[in-house]
Length: 239
Image (cartoon, rainbow, N blue to C red):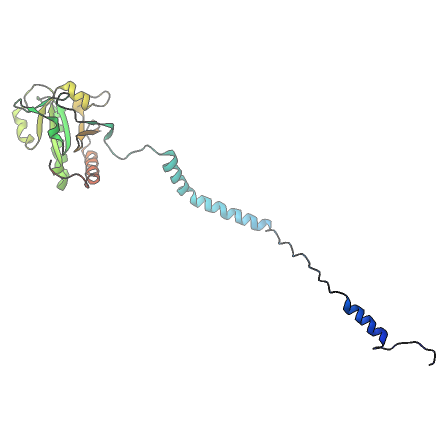
C-alpha cells in the first residue's frame, strides 16, 4: 500500500541492528570455584582415633629412646664393682714386694697379664683356703683364655705358707707385701676386711674391679669371660 512504511526481515533497519550488535565487545564472566567441603565430624573423629592408635604403638619405642638417651639408667650387668678411677700399680717405694725367699720383686714385673688377686696371711685360714681354691677353679674355667690370667696371692704378714698349701699353688705367683701398702692400693669395701674379696688387675697394672664378698664363682666367671672377650683385640697370653 502506498504510504505504508514497514520493513521486512533482511531490510536495511535489521541490518543496522545486527551491525551494532556485532560491534559490541564480547564479555566473559568468571565465576568463583566452589569452596571445598570441610571433613565431616565423623571423618575427623576417625583420623583422631587412627592417630591415637599410632601413638600407642610407638609409645614403647619412644619410651626406650627417652630412657636411654635422656634418663640414662645407671643399671649394670657386671657382678664386680668397677673401680673409678682405676688405680695404677704402685712403684716399689709405695708397694715393696718380696718373694718367699725374701728377694725384692719390682711391682712392674706383674704387668702384662690379667691378675686375679687374693690377699691373706701366710697362715691361710678357712676363708683363705676357699679363695685360693676358687681362684684356681676360675682360671681353669676360662678354657683357652686361662693363659691370659695369672693367680696372685699377696701375703700381708710374715707367716710362712703352710706346707700342705704349696702343691695347690703351683703356677701361682706368691709374694709378700705390707698390709698398709696393700690397703692403699687394693682398698676393700666399706665394713669388709681385705681378705674377703677377689681383686682384678688388668694387663696394664690397673686395679679395676673388686668382687663382692662372699664370692659367687659363676658370676665372677661371667665377668671374667666378658672382659676377656672385650680385650681380645689388644691382649695376648704371656708378658
